[in-house]
Length: 283
Length: 324
Image (tube, rainbow over the protein chains, first blue to last red):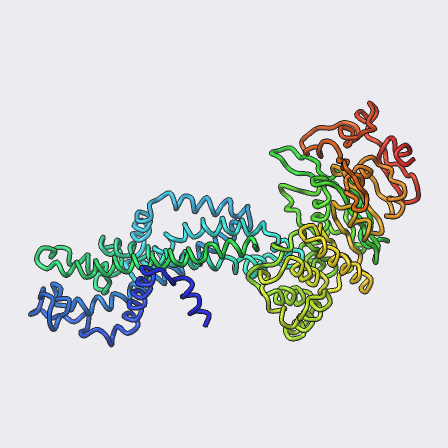
């Protein structure tokens, strides 16, 4: 099994990263099987039981509408995965394409990369805020905005790596064998970028969570009724003294997940780095 | 008409707004079945010449500023990129100096040969793979049926260079340009690779341009030689004629700086100085600062090409003196 061997070589001997990976698997399972795992409908209101303390039947207590916090947390995992995966896809597709094309066609790059520089001049959250105010609040728009914010760094990284690969002899050899631009970019250069792309993806996945939570908290992210960890924080923040568990549970979930993704990303980068260098130098 | 005809090729490097000439009027021609050796120190423009023939100069920082390159009657400079791509890897192919980096590390070697084949020939995947195995066998890779699925990093330098040769030969090119194909290899492997190229040439009638800084390699494999110095052909002649009657002090210097195994030499004669950098302005003969025979004439006037025998051309004021 290639995957098993890859996981062993990446996470073997790294306890924290392994725990992080396990946690992320749990989150993924919760997201997939949310309807089966959640004891209540996350949107069902039970006014009598509002703001009840953690216990039975409401494991994590209820919010000010009387919705079950545990069920909402499980459904929130879905949003976590959707936001993370969506942002990664948007960021890698747009940023990756811009970076690669810019490096490969220097004149185009002179224009595109200046645009990227302008976008990068803004702090990530500010850029996200500016973009989101232009759009309606929805899951798709949140994903788009966060994706675009991280497309800038992706473009930068891929720009540099493509520039380096473009000077490799095997690219000259490909030109000599009569390969066209498309074939050189996507068949000869792109496969060499898979490793850094993977690492980049893991970090974007993590940061997207933070961005989404921040946007939710500011009331600019997902529509208020959507069960997401950020929304839970944002909606219940006024009850922090009366019902602190409403903030603690989603807060801890966000921290654990982001931390886990960073650990996993680190492990992947460390595992890939030396090998990546080897592949390029051919040593 | 020769298969490859390079006439008065000029290449310049852009430095800021100034164009510095690095190849200044190089001419040579190669016929089918023939091997031309281009020899010279680092920085004399031999690699740039080969890159220019393959169309690998980027056209901005390094560009062709004059001359024509004719291949099989076509002016390569006048071809569209598409027409050019149809020729490259097909009717002309190139082998690079570093076998370690000239194969894409993420593909199996077989796939790279197959890709080149399918780019130019209408072959099924199956047929292309069979042909790739044949080619690997041809370049004497042991157990080609297995090795075709190896990744480049699983092969030695010599094997990778053979794969490169197999790839270059995949479409039976008429012209093969080999830029220092053996420099990065062990001496024993070097010999095998050179023998292999000579053998394949005999079988397929390919014309070869062999670029090297090693006169020994050139002497053994080439039919004719062009000695380059600072972007010019200092001396050109058929190999036997060249070694019988060296007429340029630079060629003589190159030869003297080769250690001879069966002689007990205490002192190896190197050419004093170094190749002038491209932005150094030189008047007269480019070699005069390093030449033992240099006079005032050399530092003032550039020598005209001199024909000292049929097909033996040399650019030196004192060629007659050097020969004797």
